[in-house]
Every structure is written in C-alpha cells, then in structure tokens.
Length: 207
Image 1 (tube, rainbow, N blue to C red):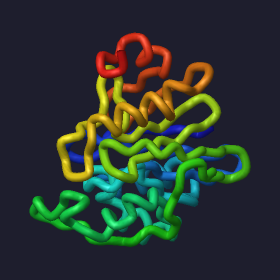
Image 2 (tube, one colour):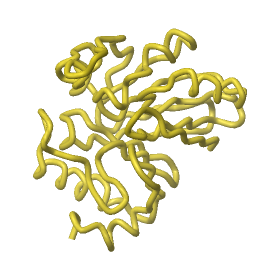
Image 3 (cartoon, helix red, strand yellow):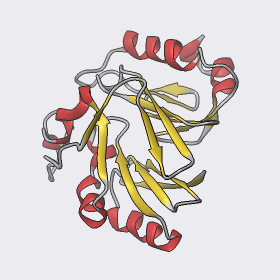
C-alpha cells in the first residue's frame, strides 16, 4: 500500500493518503485542513484521488473536504450516522469558529462491514466504532487500521462533546478492535502511530 501522512491544521490532525501502487489511485482519509498541501503532495506523488473518507464528522477531520473534492472530483464517504455533520456547522463544531463548514454532502454513506476498494489492490473494511461521535469509524486494511479519534497511542478519543459516550467508545474498542486476531499497526487521527498489541498491553483505558 502506498501510504503518506500529513499533520494538518492547528491541532495536527493526521491526514492519510492510502493508495494502490498498481493503478495510482488513492483515498484521502481525514483532510481536516491545509488542502493546498494535500493537493501538492498528491501531485508530487502522481496519484489520482478516488475517495475522500472521513472517519467522523468533526471540523478538524472534514475542513478541507470541499477543496479536495472540487479539485479532484473524488467521492466523499462517511458513516451514515455522521452524514449530517458534513452539512450542519453546529454538529461538526465549526459553528463555534470564525469560519463555518456546511458541505459538501456525502456521495456515499457507509455502514459497518462495508468494503472500500481503492484501485485494484487496496481494500479497507469499515468498522463502526461510535463513542467519539455516533458515526465514528475505523478502517481496517491487511495489516493497518486507521483509527480516527476512536483510539490513540495510550489514550482514546474524547467523549465529552455532543454525541459522545465513554461507555460506548470503550465497548466499540473492545468489541471491534481488541477482538481482532493478530497485530495491526494503528494510525490514529492525532499523535503517533501504535500497534494493536501495544494498546492491548499498555493503554490505561483498556485494562
């Protein structure tokens, strides 16, 4: 898998480019800001954007959706429970900021268990992991999981925002991630990468 990471925006959201080297097709995961930087890296890499995927609908993960979509024509994907976040500035929290985001709407609303195929060789399985938001998801590849704001290295996503629930996010992690066989590299929405094995052992929220 072709994989590039950019920390974008004022709070360093991890935006990932995950693609198929054979077809030069790529998905942009969580373009929260800095659309011009993302587009510049795409041009430099020679990849064509097939999908924009949001792991959830908060402003720091969707802020550059429009810029990327307008420039590439890519399909925009988000879980159905967070679909309204893309067009509602109060839900996506941009209503409390100097600039508000109210679109574009999703081209495809995802459900748990859906498969997203990028090019010919990359397949990501949608794991619905609510708790940070009602429609939070992780994206599982062959040996990597993009965890959004569900779980971080040594921590979990915050649950004090509207739609959040500590009990729900813990259950999501235990039911959808900790039950997976084998080890996976975890690529979170903020901060450094980790592994599923490491979080099983050392994450204080998952004991």
